[in-house]
Image 1 (tube, rainbow, N blue to C red):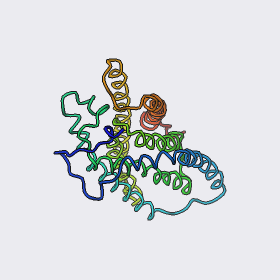
Image 2: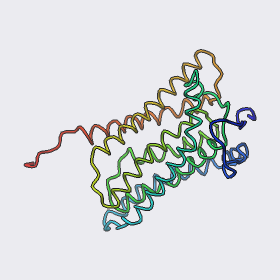
Image 3: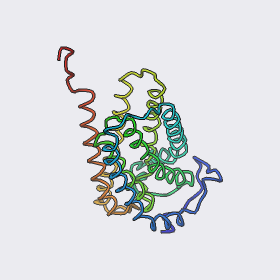
Image 4: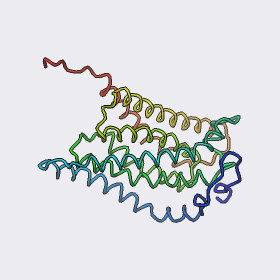
Length: 267
């Protein structure tokens, strides 16, 4: 375990003092909180459906000003996390055997990546607020939305607890979230944003899922070849299913939103 969690000096990024922390101790604490995280995920689902029922006979909350700041802060976090964690992933991906490096190896691992990986995990608790604000404003709430939030909370938690090297690619998610929350900010400010922007963001989200699935099947291939890989086999298998289901739901949303024939004005 110590070898897996070893942080080594790197020439592609220097960690700030606040980014240096005790990774093994953090993982030990997280191991003791697993039941709480499952409880939060379950409570989130219950409150989601109770909240929708509660709001049925009530007017929507007018919180546009608050939503501007909410989205600005989420976009800012996503931007910083991407900038600080991307150098390690790019450094590994651009080396020979880049995919294997990203999926399986922790050589040259940086505290900066670890810190923002942990912040990414914790941000998933904060993002549950997105659902609350959708309910409070009585906006449509899709299966895609609550499935994504409830399962991502658990997957990202285990990704750090088991220190799965493949999940350093969380930078894919934070980069998409930067554009997504920037888009939401502009909408909350009352700007008329082109539908093409939403189309592009959803397209990039699907590309993110495809990359994750490609990395997963690459891991299967590495296992078949007998190559050493620091991934936890059980977690690698289990996380494949919610990611795949999310991809299917996202694809369905994509076609319904952008390619479904619209009703004519006469109808």
